[in-house]
Amino acid sequence: MRALLLPLLLLICCGTAQAAKGAHGSAAHHRTHWHRVGRAEGATLYLDRASIARLEQGRRAWTLRSFRRPQNTPGGKPFRSIKAQHVYVCGARSAILQAQIYYPEAMGRGEPVENYRFEQFSPEAIAPGSPYAAALAAVCRRR
Image (cartoon, rainbow, N blue to C red):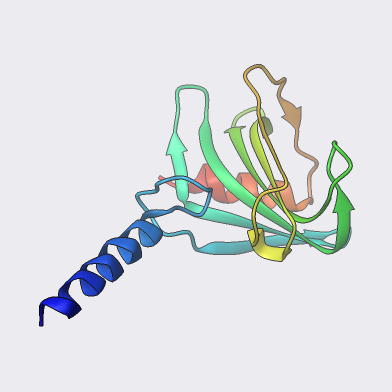
């Protein structure tokens, strides 16, 4: 009986540690469920609705853009998907990029190949009818 106790405890502890790892590579308080918001230019854009948070200047949320064909990161490495965190300024219909994580496989799978955090980034206008306009609408209508 004691011989089985240690492997069982290790299995429980390791399983709990893996389950606590979030969709964005760190400990998370929620499980990510990606909701498709649009398609364009050989890619599909998804929104993590559970990541939407109110801020003084707008709302912050994570998106996932999954490409059909490999792309290249700013550093020249191939990737198939990118998770990005934006602050959406609802009234101005713009977004401020805060972070990007590039993945080698579709839907944010695999070990990240590049990772960027931005401290000061200018707001970018969101083009009407684009997948990002659909993400903006979904983020801004959440109460």
